[in-house]
Structure formats: structure tokens, C-alpha cells
Length: 210
Image (cartoon, rainbow, N blue to C red; front, side, top):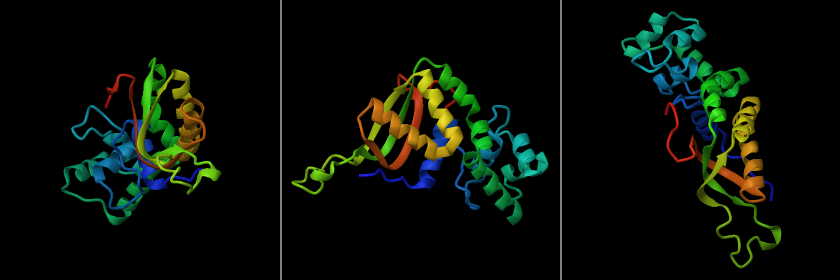
């Protein structure tokens, strides 16, 4: 049975959040959360009250920092044109190589420098069902089901994961995960639906910036 491709929107968001460490919105929806979209565009900053690099966001939107600051203070909402531009730019943080490279730069360095990190995937997953067993005597029960699986990554594994994501986005990440799980967890493992992806320290705690 060939693996099915998980629903793309939620997977794109989950993988972006995990690998970038940013609670940004990359849905591309005009009515998405304003602050989360700005965070995807500008990145995070510890020097602003909003936690967003407003200077970078303004530059990428071709606007003044003052305009963006007024959006954050909620006394001025983006115009329809600016809202569409913001939605487009925020989505590009996850759908372009340049966007993914910039969004994940800091976390990539930390993940590949750490001795061990752990990646967890929650969703409908499991080993593929051999054709001769499908729908026979209920032997397919327990194969594909909702569960969380985890893998501890070496720096080399983490580098390969980030390379796959930068190159091909969430689809590249899922291809890497399927191969990595198949080689190191259980042969012929498949992800049918992904609900959440997390990246943290080997001890289960966030090791930086989360």
C-alpha cells in the first residue's frame, strides 16, 4: 500500500513551527492572526514588546516601521491591499527556500550543535498493512492509528532534516521523516495524517528559545 500524503495546510504549519521555533502563521489566509503573520514575515525579536522584529517586517512589506507599529497597537488595521500582501509574505516564509532558510537559521544552528535533539510526530501513522492481511480477520487493527512517535537525532540527522525542509518544505520534511522512521524505527512506516510536530531536547525539555 503506497503511503498517502498528509493534508498539506496543517502539516505546513506544524513543521514550520517546530523547525523555526516561531509561533507564526503561514496559512496565507487574509484573516489570519495579525501578530502571527507579522512574526512569520519579520521574525522574532527580544527587543520589542510584541516579540516581533517590526523593522524587518516593515522592510519586507515595503512599509514604514511606524505603519506596522500602528497595526500592532490596533489603532490602525491594514488596508485590504496590505492585508493581502501580509498574507502572501507570511505564507512565503514556509513556501519558498529563501523564506525557510531565514526562518529556521537560528534553530538549525542550535539543533545541529546539540549532542542530541528529539523530534516527535503526532498523527495517524503506522506500518503499512501487507496486502494479504487487509480486511482479513481484523488483522489490520492497530496498524495505522493516532499515535505519537519520537526519534532522537544526532547532529548529522538534524542537519539532514533541515536540509530536506529547506530544499522542499514540509513535503521534503515528510519524505525525510518517512525514510528516517523506516530506517531507524520500523520498516515501511507511513504517516497518513500529521497533527503536530515538535522538536526539543533529548530530555523532553525545550533546550532554547521556546
